[in-house]
Image 1 (tube, rainbow, N blue to C red):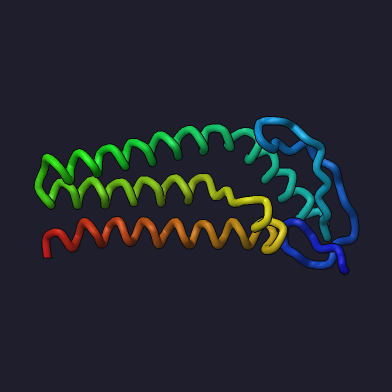
Image 2: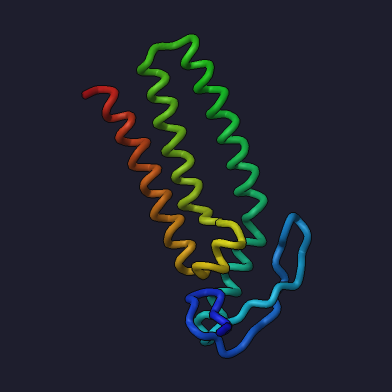
Length: 141
């Protein structure tokens, strides 16, 4: 089996061990890379991930649970328009969160590479934003 670059999935030529947080514990993880550009991109991704992963999880869980509670309350006590607005704005907020912090599982990064996984997550985030906007738009059509 050929070793692949962790960033672009080309054939790798070297590897570097970097401190990477897994479950709030810093572990030394080996990343293979094919060029200095990919090595620098991997280092930037690891730095971004280590500094923003906790923030992503806190914002994500708060947003998700807040959205669930708001949708339940709006469904019971308010009209369909208010319910639709809350649902649409919640989808837009989740899309913005995933666009700003495009974190995937480790298996996705291993299969697709950091570059392709980030691109895929940002495309999905834009689709979520479009769905949220169209949901709000369709309330008035």
